[in-house]
Image (cartoon, rainbow, N blue to C red; front, side, top):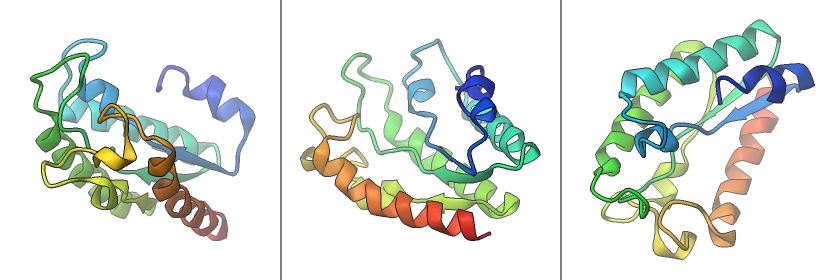
Length: 144
């Protein structure tokens, strides 16, 4: 996402960008990754947006108990830890923070079965949970 941020965000000159990132890194889709690296990449996107006058809405990573395509990584606790970092970063940098995790997690800290078909990606019901949260966050960001 960071590599594509200039083309996909900055060049379009939006008033607000919503950043929901990190799960693919935790899934090690591009190789092993550390939480610090993920956080740093997200913060780089935040700083690029702010330097270009774009307001930022920072979202928690969605809950995942296990990735079907890469089982055994135990992502749930890593996501909890990354979300704590992101929430702290949002406070530090004056960003609007959207906590999807709390409303969408089950007792295993995975995505509720009713909100996803694969435990990773939201289905229509999942997006119906997310939509009002991000809509309010975008409106708040526009008023800043």
